[in-house]
Image 1 (spheres, rainbow, N blue to C red):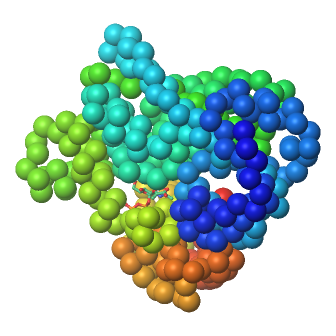
Image 2: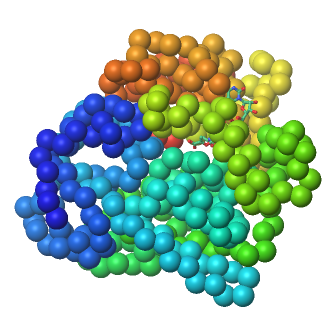
Length: 337
Ligand code: EPU
């Protein structure tokens, strides 16, 4: 294990923001974590665990130790129609999706092309096109930074919610995911309920889609709507879709007529944050080095040399603007450092 000093994180965050980590180490095996944590000097500083850096915005240099999770490896176990696929936290999420799709293991094809690492996927319960990670999740292993042991969490213990898990709330900062196990199926039950998937399948003349078809269609939709982080810095949706009460929903509707919305259970309604932001006139706007994406107002972008602070300040302006127009408070989905 080599500790690097004053390491640039520009290539390690998909916003492409230029910041340095005072100290930096990459972990390739779960055992290395216990060794690292036994060294008091090393861990008596602020710690930041980094996966693919696809859901974070750095607003300043990190004056501590960044621990990049690079644990690789995929293993499978077949039991009847079920396939248990375990992947190291440092695997690229989309590589895992491709591996499963190519082997005909069904369950995560709707999550094709989501940027980021396997280890980060349960933290915010990634989701897209009618499927969330929790739907295919079996268990995960995580390193306990207090006892220096590995603990296994089952689905209930992860307390998954919309872009939420116990690792973002009660247990924030305590555990670091080392591997994730999914329970996939050799007998696919496809989820094509999302309007855009149905429309694109029809467009391609596909009546009986395979999981490969779904993966290709989802990838096509994502590429057409979302900016590619390798050319335009971004972290996907910057805000969550707000979940509001019936009263708030009615108030927004009375001001604006139609509002893009989805039922969220317990009488609550989820509003499309991209729609709210677009209605405030921000879609495709370029403000200095930052702005919102031309095809999806929920995505903030780095047009070149934006600082994290600039992007953060712009997100404040958007929150204020949506609040003034609709009385709805947007919450950031991206982690701010
Ligand atoms: N819309 C607009 N203007 C916009 C963007 C969206 O009017 O600029 C409206 C449209 O009516 C559209 C609706 O909002 O039909 C929903 O938009 P979209 O299908 O793009 O989905 P989203 O709710 O904006 C969520 C996830 C995405 C995920 C998509 C597809 C969140 C915060 N975001 O976006 O996830 O890919 O659904 O399932 O839940 C991410 O988390 O980084 C991410 C990209």
